[in-house]
Length: 327
Ligand SMILES: *[C@@H]1O[C@H](CO)[C@@H](O)[C@H](O)[C@H]1NC(C)=O
Ligand SMILES: *[C@@H]1O[C@H](CO)[C@@H](O)[C@H](O)[C@H]1NC(C)=O
Image (cartoon, rainbow, N blue to C red):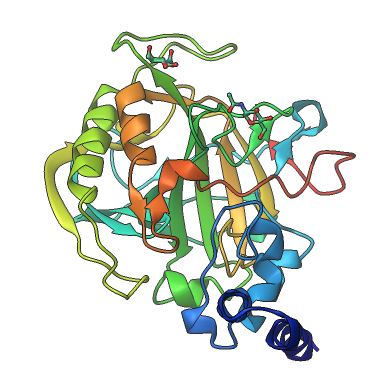
């Protein structure tokens, strides 16, 4: 069904379009899943509302447990799910390396396994999840609508995702096709021009100095990224800086929301248990600006032109899914 529809679009342009429009139409529908591309341009045929039709493996992007969501705080149900339990001390330093894989600038932890256990929500008791990487989403220009999740319709400039996969699977890719495969911790990111702690309403004051420095340094290095043609893996550049879990997590890290959702990029797998932190982290305006000036491979444009945030998928109207909180 999907393919015949794509063929129809193709033929319409073949008959009536110019040569350049034929090329354009072909890029909108890619039969080979491994070659499919997407972007965040709202006007483009590769933009967020079209993701499910670009290639057959991405049909889930049209599913009914998609992320991100608008978190209607008053609709969250209290549940005694406990708080996050990590295998290492929150202040233990570990080394990170970074790579620019298109829209997904990824930070990997080396020489340390970071594992979350003791989860009780959504039948996850007894499972352990290992950190695969950390990446960021932002909006365009200086617009505040940069985070993917929102709280009662309000966005922050950026959002940090720490992606974990269930240790019973061999890697993040095989985990992503299993219902209990993935766990993502999302934290909203504020921008600050001062290196002093400032307060977000309802949260303790914070300023993430170490993280700001690591982001600024690594985004500087990644500016020279050029597409190697392999969007899954690209070169990693070691950074001399180290981070701790405290550097990556907001203040009041005991307080979280949780729901069952999906990846926010194709293939939009509906296998993610989301943990969204109640409080944001705060990094320098310089770090946020550097991120937005990165070039992305998928569209050969600067990330800040359209940002890399997917629009909210659920929660704008009546909440019809389970949203829990532990506070
Ligand atoms: C921010 O984004 C909103 C929604 O996309 C848009 O209406 C508004 O004009 C933008 N503001 C700026 C300053 O770009
Ligand atoms: C930081 O300063 C720049 C330049 O004055 C301004 O555009 C930006 O909005 C400021 N950021 C914050 C978070 O105040």
